[in-house]
Length: 74
Image (cartoon, helix red, strand yellow):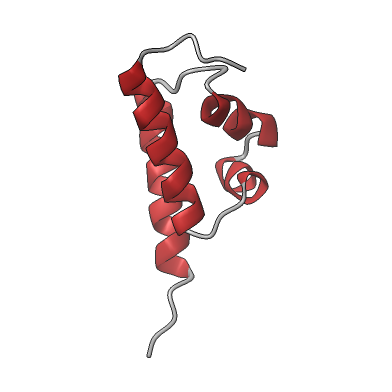
């Protein structure tokens, strides 16, 4: 599906996908953490919908918190 958004938003979207994968989160696990359906994550990652500022903050915070909680001490 072709995105209706700008090239800049497409780069942002790809960064969001990479950050989720770097945090070792699936779409489903991130959605569960956010108390949203998996389709919420899929749609913004596929460019079917945009994240507003508040959603961006919540998603970013969730990724950070998940990563922090799942780090192992050496």
